[in-house]
Amino acid sequence: MVDSGCILPKYSQIKEYLKKQIRQGEIVYRQQLASENILAKQFGMSRQTVRKALGDLENEGWIEREQGRGTFCIYRERVARGNIAVLATYISEYIFPTLIRGIEEVLSAAGYTLILANTNNDKVKEALCLENILNQDIAGVIIEPAKSSQMNVNIDYFREFERRRIPYLMVHAFFNDLDPAYIMMDDYQGGYLAAQYLIQIGHREIAAILKSDDRQGVSRQAGFLAALNDYHISIRHGFLGNYQTEQLLSYPYQFTRNLLQKKPRPTALICYNDQIALKVMEAIRDEGLKIPDDISIIGYDDSSLATASEIKLTTIKHPKADMGRQAAKFMIDMVEGKVLKPRFVYQPEIIIRSSCRSLCL
Image 1 (spheres, rainbow, N blue to C red):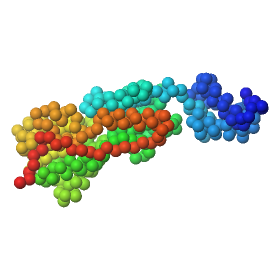
Image 2: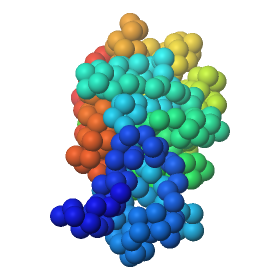
Image 3: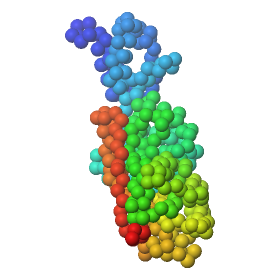
Image 4: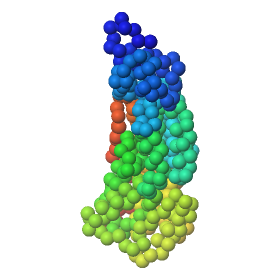
């Protein structure tokens, strides 16, 4: 195995021999290698020489040495590196199909296979999906974290990705207790921009309904309140509604009906997204009021829903397909070792349509 007449140093010969075994499948992914003592006897070399060979293999990404456990092969063939898991909170509704199509478009063109799963924004289901991903030959993971404003109870799965050197990229939000790659919108600025626009067209009695279990909603709320503060406007009691995922079907409608009974009534309402805006508009119509004559509405995401009703919705633009394409490009670069932790934040843009009325004289 080690040729005394070879010009390569002895540790390099050991390294090349082990690399050959790995390439030929004699040592497979996650297989434990023999101990340094056994390898030293096998090669007829000192333990120090073996340790130097293993150190080089670890630095080059072939193996990983774990304290108290041993040395493991972490090299995978290119066919395994072609599988990218995409874990979305939702798959078939709202803006998610467009975003996923953007991801698939780039991955497919580059020869990668997309493996898709969804969590329904549920942390228990997210844990099951992450465990399943770890049991497959996956090169990288694109994930929108479930209930991202809450505690990251699934942090151990992400730590395991890091330990195995499987890159992951978070979409729309990330957890502060990790240091991940991410791609997202500046939702704080989006909330600020929505409120600022209403203030600039004369509104002072502004309400909002925002999601509290996702980081996006928390950031949008912070931006909304910051804009009111910057313009010296106080939000009235009961003008701010917060809901969680499980309340999606009932809360927005009921909150709006209750809100419209208040005196004074708000002249404008900012919604977490376009989907919520449609539920709000239904409640307004059921109260016998008109949009924007009686109350102005702003949505978020510029989804297909924004132009689906008679009143075209003023909304904050979401990049959707472009975000998907860029997320896939980042992931490919991470898998292929071109970048370590890319990060990108889209700046919001307001799309003005017919759901807001100016109160300026």
